[in-house]
Amino acid sequence: MSKRRLIWILSAFLFSTGSDVFSQERSPIPVFLSGDEGYRTYRIPAIIRLPDKTLMAFAEGRVNSSDDFGNIDIVMKTSRDQGKTWSPMKTIVDVDSLQAGNPAPVVDRMDPRFPRGRIFLFYNTGNQTESEIRQGIGERKVWYITSADGGKTWDKPVNISHEVMPDQHAWRSYANTPGHALQVASGIFKGRLLIAANHSAGEPKIDFTDYSSHVFYTDDHGRHFHFSEDVPIPGSNEATATDLSKNRIMLNARDQKGELHMRIVAISSDGGSHWDTAYHEPQLPDPVCEGSILTIDRSKGHHKLAFCNAANTDQRNDLTIRFSKDDGMTWPEKKQIDRGGVESDDPTAYSDIVLLDAGNIGVLYEKDGYARIVFRSVSVRGSVK
Image (cartoon, rainbow, N blue to C red):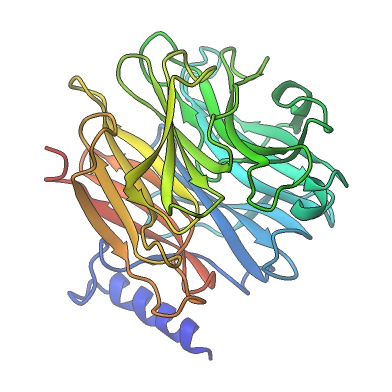
């Protein structure tokens, strides 16, 4: 038995028996374990909470290797006890030997046809590696599937590539989020489904400035889609988005250039169509990795936000949640979720966050050098008062 698997079994046992050595906040719960259930590696976590409080976790199931391209499916598990236990895995997108990835789930809670909510899962497919697609060889596509019964069944895939990107010669590489998508909860854009994304345009550049972040969105529950202008900072890449007060949207992106080791932030006052301002945020250090942002309170004036990423500027480690009580202008408080390994090849990397209730956030994240994806509940009581 491997050392990593022994540690995982010991952690799960101590938690399940109520040992005071581990609490739910301190001890991660395994969700996807690489090498189990038919997949060599699991990567790219995303998580949402359904109206009935069920948690739904998604990931890429990579069949043969940990590579970003190849035979990759999208898999799912659910939890009905706040993440303490998880269902058997279900494969929900399989495009034979090709790649399906970048799951971006969101619950549409405002369609009168579906009073119990309808799940949208946006994802990408590709027929060549990202490097080749940046060179104009092959293509990426954008799809969604929906479920109106809590993920038990899913409708047929819908290809929206022609609506959310120009022709393939203008935009080449294309990727959703990673992490959850957004439904705007209040204001004049209430109900809008908005998906953060990124693309490359034209010939590849050595400093990755052929990449730009953007969003796409729908105001009619998936009938029609529109896409935004580019974030005006070249090299902006994997992105996450949330809603702010005063009808604004914040997009938070990875800087693929990797020179400043901090996140890129863009603000929109028209629901994500255009960007009023874009800037590097020194309060949010980043090693060139993915991050996840979430609005956790809209009740008083400025919205309260949580942001989670690997906050070590040298390597993918020190997974940390930061809190803001003023729409992301300042981030005065933080909690380290997982230190990760001390070696650069043993990272704590991609993550996604979900609001469990008024006092707790769930974190789904990659751990132990991509050996597993785990879940942890984190108390936010006392944060951002």
